[in-house]
Length: 258
Length: 329
Ligand SMILES: Cc1cc2nc3c(=O)[nH]c(=O)nc-3n(C[C@H](O)[C@H](O)[C@H](O)COP(=O)(O)OP(=O)(O)OC[C@H]3O[C@@H](n4cnc5c(N)ncnc54)[C@H](O)[C@@H]3O)c2cc1C
Ligand SMILES: Nc1ncnc2c1ncn2[C@@H]1O[C@H](COP(=O)(O)O)[C@@H](O)[C@H]1O
Image 1 (cartoon, helix red, strand yellow):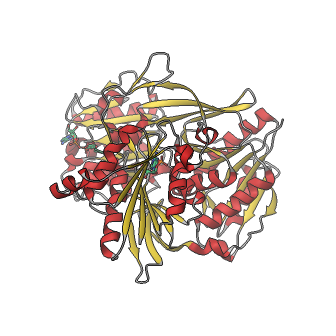
Image 2 (image 1 turned 180 degrees about the vertical axis):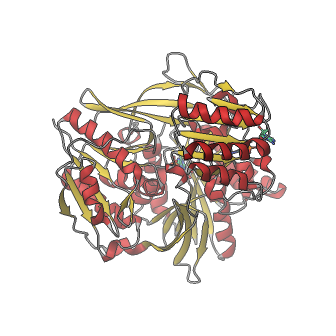
Image 3 (image 1 turned 30 degrees about the horizontal axis):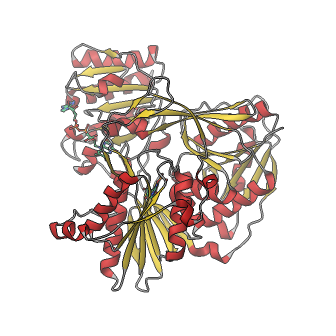
């Protein structure tokens, strides 16, 4: 089975990111860049499926800048067969989806796996777009994935408001991974050594037939701002019982929320 | 040029979600600014039962799509219904609530309808013939203000509880139109086979007006009882930090934060939660934040409007009693 995984390089979740005075851009200097956390679950699920079905292979695609080679090297170290980097450092989600679709269409994967969301612009946009561009059915935020014996149907579980859905999807299909889907492995030493021998295929959008217009941002960003500052709150310095009563009073009379 | 606003209602078996009222309130304001109409669509089992409510919220036209093919959710069928409606009605803006439904559908709809998607908006207004919106990025570490001038329609998903819900003095005409559902066999490729309700009687976390959350310091699933009791005294939803979820004290379905749910309640009570950046990502837009923590230097205190420095095992049950007393009067 041909399996594809899409991965994205994002700023580490704990990094301090400053808004450049004037609000025209963000300052990423010194910020550690990492594989988007949900993409780890996507890679692991692909490895699991590949190892179960003899003759399978994995193609990993990332759309981004030169720095994204880091996460593709990681994918090689985990043991995937092929990696492609589409060089489009400024691509937003729709543009990246177009680039990824251009790579994946001729590859004809039976299964495409993404992360639930990239924890950078948090758009939850790429996966649905890619599925539409590839004309694949898709299931978002899958927390359990099981291929049926024929490898033509799969059963997915997805937690939604008020409960859990079980979804049947026909392959070829695209799924996005929720935390809990699996336990991502770490690369072995042998994997790391093998990775050094592997080449990342680098493609330019133009080679894939994607013109500059298709790469221009879909939304015009006017300004960045830090989250609004909070004025210091009230610390209720009283013994527990009085403090509890005082808090209830404040929530009622001052905040008027209960 | 007048522009119409198209709201995708959310309902379960005909009962509208509270957030749909928020969408329609925003829709009315946008439509008024552009001299356009408000349309609302309800899809799936029980959809027709929402029509009078949607009118009461100001929908001029209510589009209903129901029937055997839409008995169970299917992202492809829903996309087809919505995109067909967009193609014929040509709205300037399509509004959805941030929810599992819009998370599943929005990207696909945007691609098919050639719309520009803005997820998780916390502000949206009509400006200079176009639209202006604000959305948090990088897990709330920055806010982006963006503009959209068309001609492509804007598909915006709005965070629940952030926008006011006000019923209009005059209901909308609510003229009902039935949407034909083109039955393409390709749409059968994905479908919900079953749904198991869980979560019990508490309100839905993502939409609750009050959320009470507990952290790792509770130490056991059993001890989480005090969080549930406090939540129940307020009719609130219960939440948890990731550390509490990872330790098995609470189910993942109630995790708040970057890798869990995003909540934006009127009141968020954090019990024994340190306030790590990834937790804040899921709750920082709450209107009022209360922290109960033994550590006066815990990061959560920087965001808290009210704080009690104390032991949750002592303070939380006392608070439960106080809330019960107060809410009786
Ligand atoms: C990629 C990534 C994603 C993540 N996603 C999430 C997420 O979605 N949600 C999330 O919550 N976290 C997330 N985290 C984890 C996050 O970094 C923190 O580890 C986590 O939020 C800490 O949980 P906590 O506050 O319960 O525990 P701790 O940080 O251990 O804090 C415990 C707090 O309880 C206080 N305390 C101790 N005893 C008492 C007592 N008796 N009474 C009152 N207070 C007491 C302490 O002073 C402390 O402030 C993520 C991390 C990563 C790397
Ligand atoms: N630039 C990109 N390159 C490759 N995959 C991406 C890219 N952007 C998003 N993805 C994939 O789509 C998922 C959801 O991203 P998003 O829609 O941006 O929240 C990610 O977890 C990745 O699997």
